[in-house]
Image (cartoon, rainbow, N blue to C red; front, side):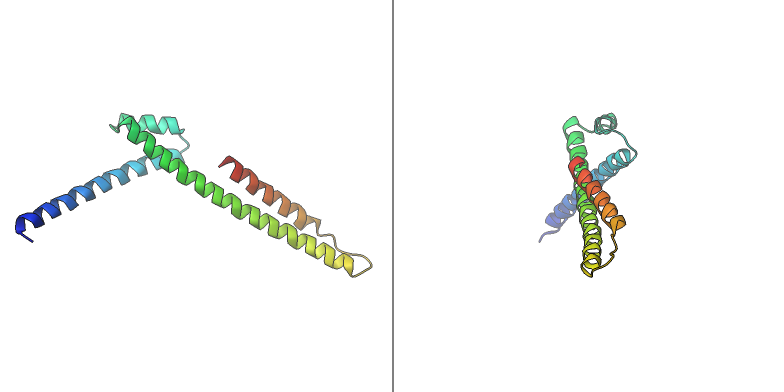
Length: 128
């Protein structure tokens, strides 16, 4: 490879790295605004104010919002699974102690806590 071709590759790589750094800075700027509670529209306006084209600003906010929704949905599914597990354990304890005859332990605490946790997860998934 000639020296001139090596310089072109190096310059191209340098420009790619600068573009990547600039995009990362914009994404971090927008993410900080979103974490601080600003609406998507306000974050788009803030990006436009610092010189980002509207389409790019909308794309950045859309991508960040999608990541946030996906993370919330994933957490919701985890909450649902945990709630179901706790509720099932409560039911198993209740059934097992009742089947032994005589009195039994009704693990209503675990059943109620499991149900609450499960429906919190359902709400989190539904609103993500």
